[in-house]
Length: 247
Image 1 (cartoon, one colour):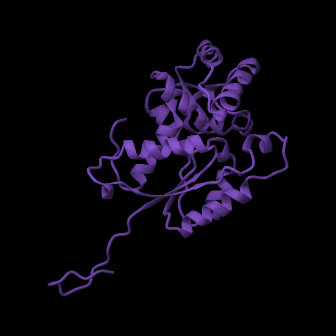
Image 2 (cartoon, rainbow, N blue to C red):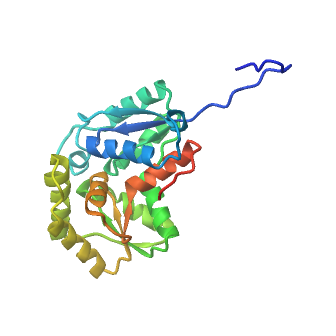
Image 3 (tube, rainbow, N blue to C red):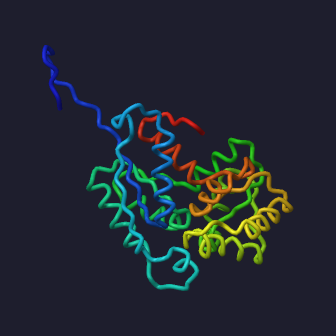
């Protein structure tokens, strides 16, 4: 509550939205989202930016390894704990800059007392709005096995395709052998997977792993690609009452 001198009544000050980033999945992708939020905010001073609290729990068990049955370390407990920590520090809406982690989305959204943005569903909805009729899915084995994007496409009524087994191995190599190790992407491998999707009739492809968003940044990919991190950034700013610029 605040009181304005000269007024006869007390007024309730509107609550400012605070974005919580449940990050570290991986760290470079979380850092990129934070920078993107800053870059796409129409600000002339510090106070024009949104308030953000970030958890970068890099020690969170690997999501793909758990989903694929290669590890018994369940990431959910860590994600849930960090979600509550973000809420404790004032977060009113959460964003998770990791597509594979959305395997746990329904459980997490049910457990937490604040809204959690769903990056894959928002991304597919935006792809459809952009005129996409068949979406190519570039993502981790875990995301593909969970059918996160396939189900989102089905819900939106658009077709989808995934790379062949050989090309999917190349996508995983770009994610784990290149980006997660701080290297530039092997564009021969990446390009081969993209060519495979185009041959299957895709008119757009989603960068459905936040590490692949860094490929778009570094290699200046074109309009064939829809970047899940950009989608998350735009919707996160809008959820915090900001009209994004520069998209």
